[in-house]
Length: 640
Image (tube, rainbow, N blue to C red; front, side):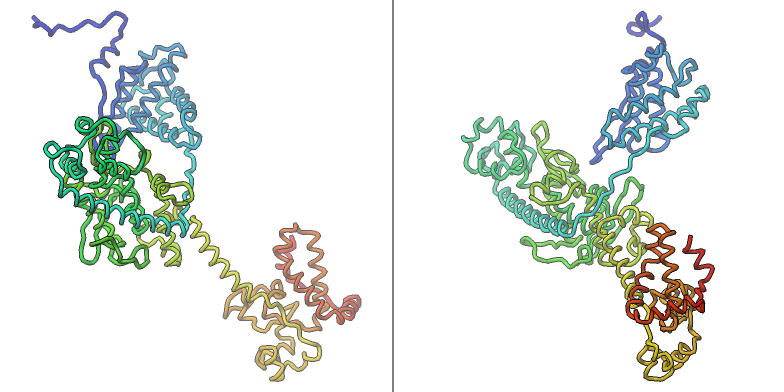
């Protein structure tokens, strides 16, 4: 006989067995770790949806998927499942189905069509530029696909649907450009100034702390005592409410002066006072941006997320520099890099610092960052390099990993506070690209040289070589190469006077033409006739390279500096000029401009120079004693 309290309760009238089953199983919960390694619980309550049985199956599949693929964070998959279940209830009801009776193996409802309908309505919930709908759709398909693979009763149509791709398409991300060199220098100068000011402020705060006492005994009306309370975990908004007058003007002068130094917004007086006292001892998130800026500009092989999550144990100092162990969660990669002392991004750095220690290279910046957070670690024990102390919503001091994504604490807020005129978007990833392109500007070379050990060539070309600086450098290289060609081609052919042709074998005439006596004799005897002109160096063509016979004659002779024109060749050149003009009528203007415009210009200049010889040349053409003999390949290549 059951004891008291052990009798099973009968389900209320109108409820179904599946609802009782869901209630018995309960909420699906997964424990994850967010930013700063703070624990959070991600959950799905199937009973909260109109289709609880389907929601329970998908929630189980979500947990199974996260466990199978060892996901660090599965919030997107949970959101996708919850969003689909929210949509599926009204959608199934509109089709005349009972949502509470629908499961993955149901045969009287087309769940594949429900997935399609859910995907189609997703983009309307997000901004046009958002990729969130695409990522949620992919997450749901992956979860349902795993569930279908382990449930043989799932319909073939749903199984085929979740094996496919989403009907949504991922939008192309905005390509980030680097900051200009002037912006880089302005940010570097501002960051250095802020670090000096921070070190000076913390030094003054620690000096005051040494003179402070427990405010419960010595009073809450002295700044030194407030700092003592902040150091020993006694300072809070509630404590200030209990021990200070309600009106700010009734506070001691030193407390009101402390209020005026508080940066940021203007919260109520006691919260401002707690924040002002805390910032005399501990850096805030806005105070850590200068370190972030300088380190990203100096550490070209470190991403913002790798830098952001560095622990104190990841940094090992030595006399020659610092060894940093970097963890990249997206790539699931851990690597150690050594940063020598003395340079920042290839530049020598100044050694003048605020009283005491520290330089502006990577080891120096790391040492200074460790030092400004020394008191934070003593008071709160936080392990991160970028640990910030803020006043939380309850009015107490809280230390944790700086998120840099809260209003008033973002990178853009630091830029605006410093009145820096910087191009948008205000994205710290541009700092890394700036450092990369600055390195490329210094090193030059090929893509493989610039990618170095940091990236594959393909990654560097796709993510860094598109920047403005890289384009400018590439354009300069192309312009320099083209200028060399233009310099060689700009001279054009040399016209030899009629009386000088028989004398080309003479030393003085050959030297004036810039050829040897042997070449002069060959020119005189017609042995170097290329069809339209003669050639001084057939095996040193600017088009085929040294040591190789020229294979572009006579097509390119008129734009070649090796070309030599005799007056006896003017009839053939006149016929060639007529041929070029006929091509002008037959070819598209861009094609004619590309292939024949330069030759037409050279011919016009040549004919202008020897205009008095053209009538006689025209007479030879009319008499039929001259023919234009062009290679067949030249006609078929250009005359189409």
